Image (cartoon, rainbow, N blue to C red; front, side, top):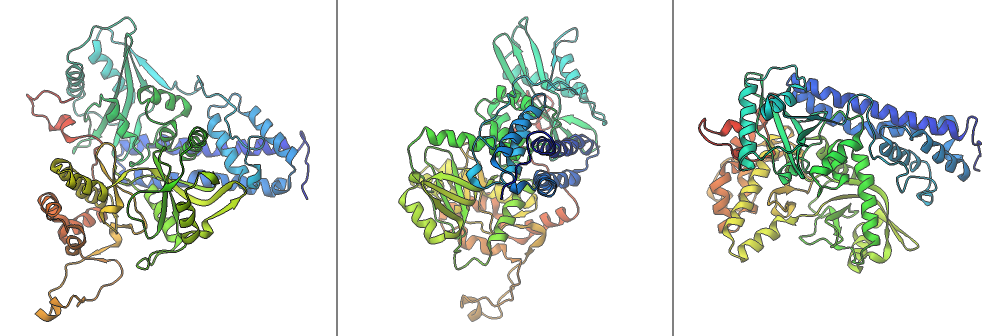
Length: 593
């Protein structure tokens, strides 16, 4: 029996208030931990940085669950009638008219409501299928979204100096004048000379630094006439604990790589997140808004915007979902839509015979990847539940695979196929396919680059405390920038949970040649000497791999990486080439831009 609690009194209005209070609590805590990123950076609390990233992942779901429990306990929400729920939404919209984060609050409303209502209610009468509040030109009360600077008496150097000083880091710079000189020279060389300043010349800089790992990034753009020039300036600690500017990134595509989903999320103190996204879109127009929200730590909003874009794409396309190219996985069933650059992954009901894991463990591995520093080497995933797809858009092979390997993971309701749980990630060319293609084309340079990238991916993941487990080529992909990224997570482990061993000598020649294992192997034991057996079958691949990454086939590298992690050492990972770093230039060497 559904209960109507009325429009005004203790009914719909109080429910709407409870929901906005739940959201406001969430964003208050979100801003607090983002604001504290400045202190963690100043104190060089790198382990604290990683802890904060892990803990922030849980914030949203915890607040949603709290709000759902409150609505059920105080308002018997699961028994409200349709009219009341429609009134709740209308009253909630009224509470957003002067809100600083209305788009996030709408998504929070959806998250709470869809945990209470049946999926038949998942349309715009009851939830925010479409946004109702514009996010254009929202002004913050605390600080403006960006600050504007002008070249006055001290010229451009003076403006750069003021920009850095205005972040008020409580650590001195080793030599800020030197760093400003490097920045000025890099800009001059990038532009092949300084252009004449137009009357509208100004530099706009986002008000909060972007904190990630051991760096703080200053992000902005210069405006001169009809031209706009984006930039990102990473600030780091030196060995003496003082600050320095490491480089300046002046190409939009390089700045875009900072926001790659294969990297950890930023900590940014934003009163008006839509203002930050709008500014970033002005310098990164090719970057989807959904990915920018995700990289700002607002994953649920990113997922909301992603799925709105995806539904829009489905309405304007006709191709069918097909099985993703590449070797079929033993744990995940993977399909794709050729016209859309993503793959859709479902955990199978039936695993390959060699797999001893289960569904809960696989889900935990995917969550683990979100909580660690992905160092540009692990693809992020968007996790969804109860997703409706048009049944007619599925190829017969995909439907057959679903029925055979994952029957509990989907259901068909009329003309809709509902997938109960899936992951979505950027589509890449599988590394094994890429290597075969390069070898057939006799493209030795591209082949070598991919193999070097593959070894570097394994090396960097290990230094970030991740052992990939299954290191076969098919579990890695190649991005459009030629970077190799890992995307198969069902066997990953923390490096510190692995026991890297040398294979002990065989007691005699016959035992060694028998092909049988003559030594005890415990859970967590890994023998790097064995990697070559299943990775380096091709003579050309073997030659390149041994040239660049021979140390990955012995225990020394792995055990050294473990020791550093256990000692609390946090490795430096630079999302830009080493040659761009000012510290790698000789005193008389011009900046590289």
